Image 1 (cartoon, one colour):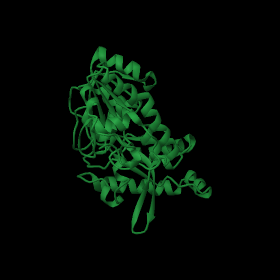
Image 2 (tube, helix red, strand yellow; image 1 turned 120 degrees about the vertical axis):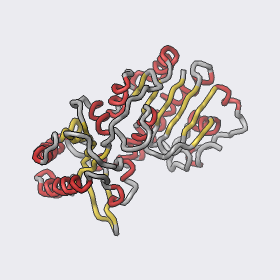
Image 3 (cartoon, helix red, strand yellow; image 1 turned 180 degrees about the vertical axis):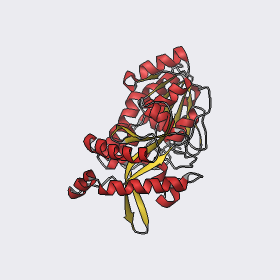
Image 4 (cartoon, one colour; image 1 turned 120 degrees about the horizontal axis):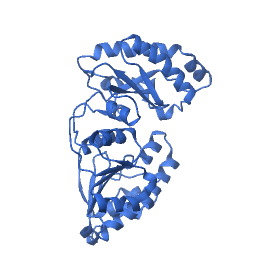
Length: 333
């Protein structure tokens, strides 16, 4: 009867500007047991929770499966914009490009031909912001997930490994194709950033593992693919915390992946981020901490993906000497 909640995009160990008051989260931060796992990002954290820690993440294969694509070897291949900034290249993620479905379809079709000519299985774009490359065999690459690459010099985050030189040539050719594409010319004329590169990652293959969860909740393709791999059901978040608590009581440990705050941050949407935190508080944390305090759940585990894990048990509510503080002041003591 335990619930694990993965909430990327909420970094409560340091002050959060413009954060609303969130009593349940503030109390959790003050009174729960805490430890510091690696600040590995949401994808690596999710893989670890399913029993695949460290190494090259199997994100391409799992997320493609979660999108409903055919079985096989896949790489994530995000459409991005690279721009020079002082002495380095800056990487802009797909969320900031505002790609329209027709634009994504046209660009993906041109790249599909390019990659098929190179002997790959082509490129699929099931969503304007989520693209995948199908491979004939596993790529011998060490890659950097996009969420981590955004905080590194691009040169330090490029693919490495035995196949890296071939991939660098192929991706450079793709950049040239994108530079000349009519979609990008029209975007530039309209003052919008072009899609001038692909960022590839996630070449790993998950080993066999038995998940410690009986069910999962969320909509992320990676979650759906990982859950399918280990044979557990995925339910929509719309069912809410009440259904989640009942399911945990009946079936055992449940995993919730809640990404609204991270999605708002990726868009640089402060108002959306504030609204997401308020939803997290009212729809999830308040009911879940209440269920722990009433004995309906044994524990609530919160993973941020950013170097903080919290475990809240019923007896922790009596830690009254640990006084909650507003997130804008730096979280709990």
